Image 1 (cartoon, rainbow, N blue to C red):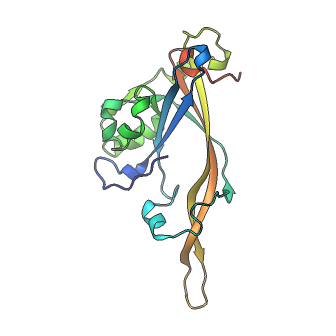
Image 2: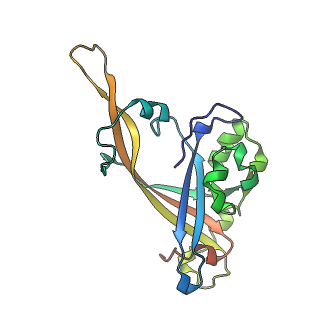
Image 3: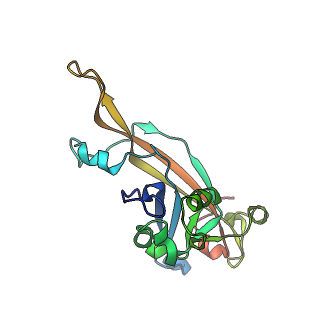
Length: 207
């Protein structure tokens, strides 16, 4: 996930979060070594701790394997727009580096696109996929036998640990609470998106 702290340009780069997934192929089935996907969505305020705040808070035992203190619910997202890789830097300067291996598979949502357009991002950064009504008629890729047929692909991922909320402590000599740590969260995501060929979603075996 990407949450850079850059100066405001056409859009605040803090308003974009990027997920990248590298899916290992099965060579014995003729698949490539890996397949890359990127999902770009709007980052809401207070969704993650700012990097500036994390830099000021020193955690004990930084090498320790940590468990999330809070498990947040599954978020299901229907990705119905793609991001033009060559113009992606206008949305986030980090997109071209993070998603270089997924140049043809960068997905986002219409509702997020509307927000970014209002913030001044040019419309040619985005390319529409088939309309939702048309996609509803397509089967899930796990139900398609022909690898050349279009379908709706699903990919799930889980963030086992990320800093989600600042902790505040009370001290006898301090009249107001003060920042004293970071609360960690776990969260899962499920992304649905259109692919023109079942070949591009071979991992989706569920009906």
